[in-house]
Image 1 (cartoon, rainbow, N blue to C red):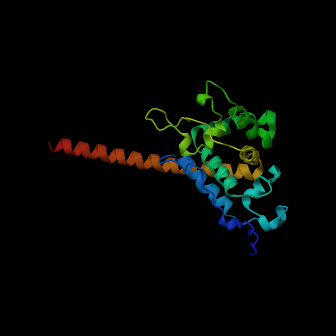
Image 2 (image 1 turned 90 degrees about the vertical axis):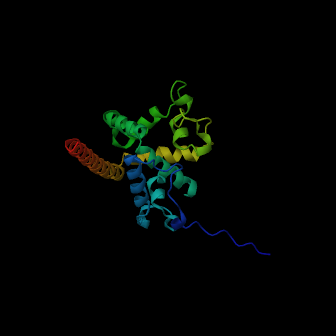
Image 3 (image 1 turned 30 degrees about the vertical axis):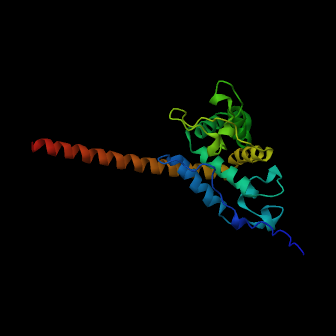
Length: 217
């Protein structure tokens, strides 16, 4: 019986979903996840990568990692990284990267900030690295009421996982990465302003209703 050879991976089959999706009410996480998915669905010019038959946008972005193939795990790690950018901690890494621009330069400023942020410290985050928190599945996270998402054990990460995240931070320092980041931040600002206006209008309506009710009593 002849066993057929495995079919090559079709980039269209790949999903770009984070390990833990964006949280309700966290506009930054929602925007970064949406914009990352849209970026990965763009058509890539074959001339920009070495192996056009296996081309994906992610392969183009992290081409310097020299991975033999971009599979579902790499896509999941990358989408989780994008979601992480939208939380307060991810924003702090971006802010530090901006501060390091003068010394590290545009290209390496964010990966330099990540190296500082990802250093293990016994007194920070229970001694877990930032990448362990970023890529932790549900069974690694404490579920008691006051744990606030702390880890109960470290996830099993590979060297490839670390490479993918590092090269994503490097890409964020490129012209394309900077443009994508700026687009995300503009959309976050727009949605936050809209949410603030909606809340302000709701509070005004509630206040006017309470005033009218009091006037009829």
